[in-house]
Length: 65
Image (cartoon, one colour):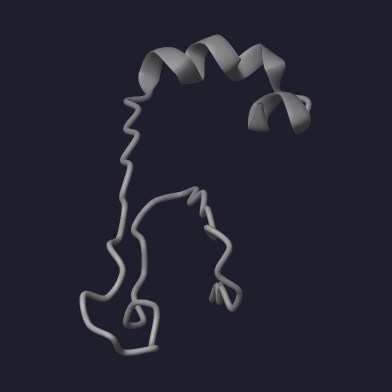
């Protein structure tokens, strides 16, 4: 989709054949205590695209470079 959106369809087959794909699914469990603090410590994900599902919890923060 990215190559197509950039008008580079002619490179699509070459790119697909030369690339290894990885899909990682992560689920973070909520706190196991009665504390009201939700969330994780600050961290970075070492991938190109991250899809986040907020799960009806407001306050998602995303840092970009």
